[in-house]
Amino acid sequence: MDAKLEKQLNRLANRNKWEDIAALIEKIPENEWDMDIIEKYVHALNHSWQLDKAVAVLLRYQALGENDPLWHYQLGYAYVNLSRYDEAENVLLHGKELAKENKKVIGWIDKLLEQAAKEKEDKAKRAEAEAKRRAAYIPRDPNTPPFDGFDMTDFWDDCDNSLKDYAGAPSTDEMFAKAEQALGYKLPESYKWLMKQHNGGMVKRVLFRLPFPVPDQSDEIGITGIYGVDPAKEYSITGSNGNQFIIDEWEYPKIGIAFCDTSSCWNDMIFLDYRKCGPEGEPEVVRIDQEDNDAITYLAGDFESFIRGLVCEDTVDIADYPQFKYSPNCYENEIFVKAEVGETKICQCCGSKTKYYYASMYCRENVKVLCPHCIKSGAAAKKFNGVFIQDAESIETNSENYADKTDELFHRTPGYISWQGEYWRSHCNDYCAFIGDVGIEELEQMGIAEEVLADYATMDEYEIEEVREYLTKAGSFAGYLFQCLHCGKYFLWADAD
Ligand SMILES: [Zn+2]
Ligand SMILES: [Zn+2]
Image (cartoon, rainbow, N blue to C red; front, side, top):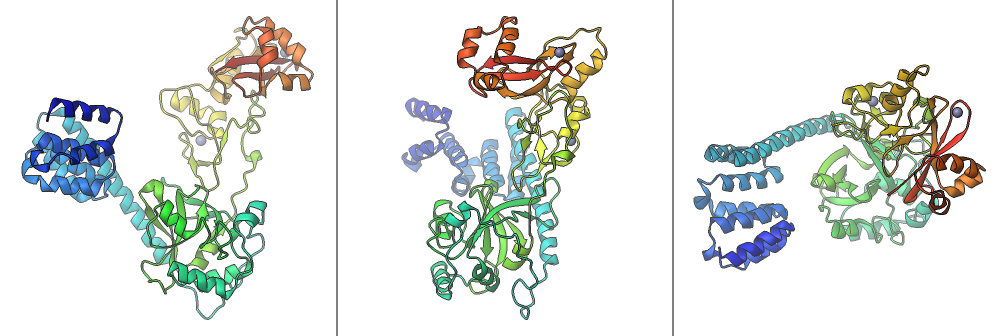
């Protein structure tokens, strides 16, 4: 390879321009390619996700690569990412033998082998759960009318968005016929029945809970609306955001009809799946997840069973969650993140599901999800050997219950969202309660601006004139309000980005 080309390729690689690299190499006549060029080419193909092409090129040069560990590594990489795990393991193990003393290449290969083993295991677990779901399916009795005995009260959510974008004019046989013709599939009778009651719309029963969930995986799907058959509505199966759009713009596989959107904004969609039954048959209901390589998950054996499986989101009662002495407004202040509809968060400390979670901690491990209970009990601080508060104004070490107060603040109280980390105010020999974010406007409304500014001036931090002029609630110069638990006096802390 000439020096100029090598330099150019390296520069592109540094900027992750894999498609440009592949295009550049394709311009070189193939009879001039050597193993070095082939490896750079395949590397670029793998990284720009042109995996089938990478496999084809590598196999074409098998004779050249047979004794080359990198050739094996690249082929294994493509196979793993194409979910061809057995072939991947074969080629990688052979590559590892060839790599002998090359620790770097062996390290790469081991990582891929680990990934392949884990994905293979996940796939097997999913297949097992799916088989159980299929086995539990009871086909509907064709002699009973659709949705017999189904309680429709509080099913549809007729909010403004739904009426504007989803819920169409009363459906007619002509609408069904046109939709079927445009889509090339026969619509299920139970779908038609439901659309005659209400021609699509957002729903109140926003959760589908997967029967036979896979351990460690989310078992809930949060849905938004069911698409009707009025093409004038954006979110209908033949509307401007309907099936054709989903397949053309979002490149979903063509297995049937996208009829139900989810809380992920099109990153996953619910489809009527006609692969098994053919365009005239009774389709299954599946979820296709683009974030997971277009993985297809079986949800229900037919449309009606899917609809019957929808439930309302669990009501989250704040009373079930602990209160914190030093942060009494933590839920209103959104110090805990509330999980999205259909999102399952598992506390990294106790392993339980939680709707509210705290997403950070000062510790060595990467802690992203902690339930309020594990903070309150001190279990999280103990398990991860960390704290939640960066710093606090000191209280007298010989004051009553000093150790317990300090332990409760640092180890059993969630912090607050700030620019430079928490600084917890204290008074009357105890830590104050964090009330919330404030700017000068809020302080004036509460009638405490002069009082807190006078105290703040004694701290020798930002100039009082600056605070008066710029302090804004949750702004780039932000204020944090505290209140003494004993005398009731208010105190301010401020920081900037
Ligand atoms: Zn927990
Ligand atoms: Zn006080």
